[in-house]
Image (cartoon, rainbow, N blue to C red; front, side):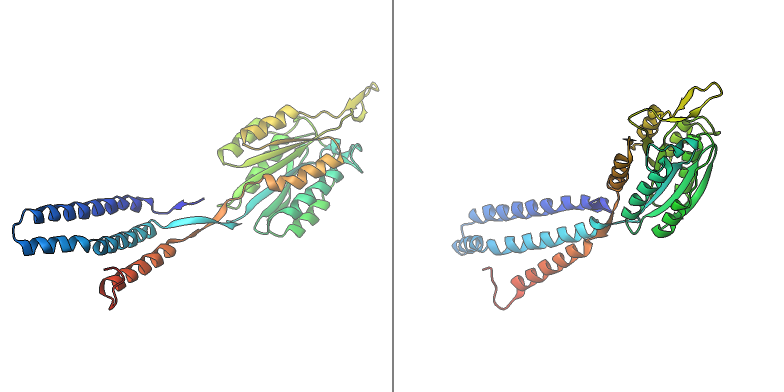
Length: 316
């Protein structure tokens, strides 16, 4: 962000108009005093000096401009560059519970989510770090944060489905912990689930609170279908349907200043992950431009010396 590293120096700029108005006041006062003298020679001299007033006034303006550049340089202004600062730590938190083996996505929900996650990983900036956490009845680290996206992608494809329940809170908490492992970087967690939190020891609301307190943005992706998906049958032959708790995922995103996305098929899931990188706000790297103002001050002072003492004075 454009600004100053030492803005307190800018207070000194108040001196500049004060100096100019003081000079203007003294010039007018001397002219008025000269008029009251009866000595014709002194009067002529004073009137002749009024014709020369353009020169000292111009020299003063140049000196004040040089002083202003020096003061701004001391305030150390900076502007953002096109390149990003440290990069972003991006942690993918994937649901690998039993419901992720449903075949409404091809070939399964899990394989489709892995394929879409790869799109995101390949779109990340070179300075970004990526890691993966998986969860079912509990949570585990599948790939630690690394700038080597190819390595993370290999770990992604090695993930296998589990038969457990859905511990969204545990998965999110472990993702937050992984994101925190590298300090002084922006941190983002992308959570994908197709179910309802029904296992684990950490409630999703509590995990979302952890993320909010640590300034970690969480994007959530709900994986569902336009038609009911049968996962199996109970002892009485009744169908068991996949249930997506959208309200829970929306709340997590809202609390952490993130965003919730709803996927209904392979195409929408791929589009979501393809656009997620654009949603990550990256801090631009700043560069100091104080030397520009110091050089400008040097040029102005050199010009002022030339005008004042040069053999051929430009201003008469």
